[in-house]
Image (cartoon, rainbow over all chains, first blue to last red; front, side, top):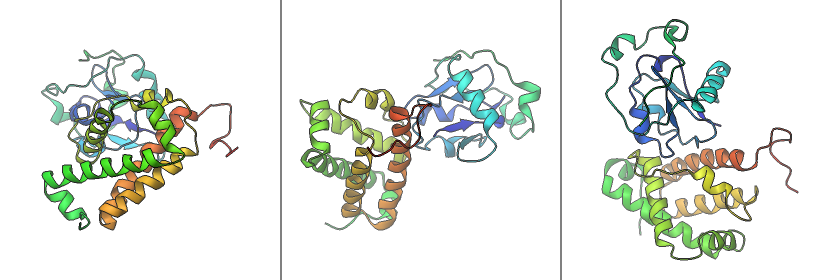
Length: 112
Length: 140
């Protein structure tokens, strides 16, 4: 059981979650974060911290694509535990539908 | 001593930190005295318990108050525990809930119990899940 980062993180990447996570299980891509499913302890602390409401528990249905994406990129991207400034245009992209198809980048972010 | 209420816990940081301190101290006193859990915990933490109690206060503070004070890898730590057994998670949860109910009102005890159960489930999966075996593992 784990929490999962979903579509609305893309291009918003506020990073509030990384500061509160007790187990440092966030990994940073160029324009989104993911949760490492084997490190997340399901404490739920990150969920209400996300201004974009992009973090959901895996008990919620229809998350197969996101579960797979989180697992895959958590093992490729660098760990992030310290929040930086979010992208300057984060607010403009908050709530834009179907961001994965339009904007997802598989490139790693800078990490800590 | 009066039970700490959810309202007090949510309103004042001092109260909530004290509540967590009392819970951790009382709970691990029970754990060490428990015939099943005691020997495993004493083997895993053979020396001074103060650092562990401090770690656990930080952990529960991070989980309940979202201060980010604990940073660690509990999955890796639990995988290393000698003698850890699936069924002992139930014992741990029962003792934890008992301690919460002794110190807190019903609502606050329930909030701790729900967090503890979720975390326990995820630690159980991390330590014991094997893709080629049934889940949950049989009690044998």
